[in-house]
Length: 293
Image (cartoon, rainbow, N blue to C red):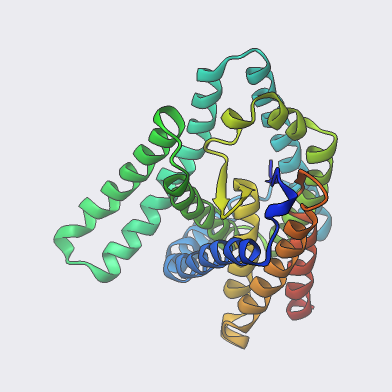
């Protein structure tokens, strides 16, 4: 469920493109830091319980099916959201969005804050920080959804959560599934934005629909799904290739994704809404494949 919106083509300026790129780069760097820090935890989890998601296995065909199943799940969730908005069920809509985002935010921030506290803080502060920070993050998400959508606050919190999700997928999904997901969702993104439920969702109640599901990057709005995939691929590159190539694959992947994002944003001077994934994901996956095969 990703989209990038920009209602006034005149706002597509070099300065605004640089601001948007800076926001995304900062989020990607945070994701790389999270990936590096949380590596021992997620490696241990995968070794103990297996990948976080691989119902069809880890082969190329299985990875493609894994991605297709998640796309189908995303499609179903979007239909539910559209149904709620069309019936003006605003509170259930917000509860649905909050529950989806808050659950992931609490679990992943518990890991991130816990690892940070364990590595850098006195023992007496580990538990308070490990459990206190996730509670604060969830409370701030609730505030932006139910009380007041403060753009800068929502952007910081949701960008952080998106970076955590992208990092989590990079370290716990089988490699080919982690590569198939961005491609599958990029294809779905084209349909969802131009013809499918995402277009209907935004058109039904744009101000409501984007709360808790998007961040502001200067004059532009990026879907939370965009943030997840913009951070997944650099995190995957760092996770897979750091021992052999250092941070170079991650840096090149960030550059490729952000060039694709800037191209997409520039094209918004001609359209009000465009899918945010196809061009960045194509370029990012190509960079990773260069190191993988």
